Length: 94
Image 1 (cartoon, helix red, strand yellow):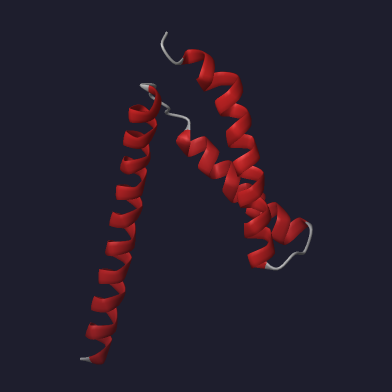
Image 2 (cartoon, one colour; image 1 turned 135 degrees about the vertical axis):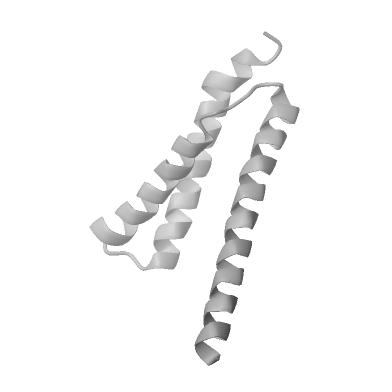
């Protein structure tokens, strides 16, 4: 009986986490479109780049996870600002 409950709670939490992830992705599409009237389908690539940066900082440079995550967030903020200024800003109103 306890194995059933453990599996039940594990699958319930896993399903809720996946559902929240899909909701966050959908919300990001809506926010980006409403802000600039531009569809950005490159969100997945940018997300993967952030994951690779965390992996690079933690494995290659042997940093703790919290520091690698912080550095990756800061790096992605800079990369996102560069992409917004060079690619998306000129497209607004076109």
